[in-house]
Image (cartoon, rainbow, N blue to C red; front, side, top):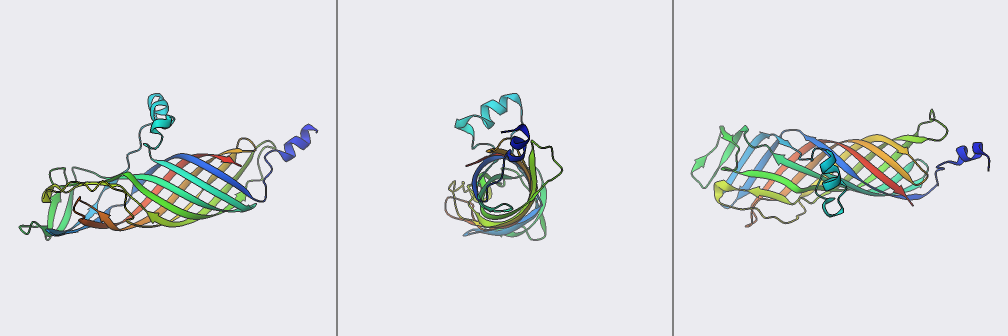
Length: 255
């Protein structure tokens, strides 16, 4: 086979192909209103600020956390299996393991009451563990079905293939919410729970570095509707809607 023929056939795309991906993500979250309801409380916190908790990439965290098989699920991670049913379209099952932490030390508007004595209507509430700590850090886990379209980049060297892609996804959210309701003396539920739904749009770049391996960078915007968050061991509830942006880097294998 000539060198020219090898270049032409390098990483040729099959009409149907499975792929697996694994990678990592970072998020930013818009402010969110959180509504709480239980047997001794019903109140709302308005405009609550939250962050993600991705570990800083250093040589130590790279080998001790990111690439350590025993700790590989601890960072904010992505997992995906896709079926490319023609040269420019694919269907995928995707997991975004995100993390969401309400920032302590902020003051927000609040209304409602708890323990039938502390009235919060039109008031201000300082958020700290002495009042409440709220996070989804064993996962704001979004499981989605995604439909993807691909757009090959033609102006590439002969030995390199790349493509832009766009996708739309819809699915469910199964968080493990770590919430301490100190103001009513309740500890966290600490169980995975189907709490809501998700819709998202994304786009990015996919680059092949051999016939079977590739890397993807993705930018995603989405909205999580958490209508049934469990906030305590006695099954108190919360609800919120979260708008988010996510940037991810994944490595993939075709088979």
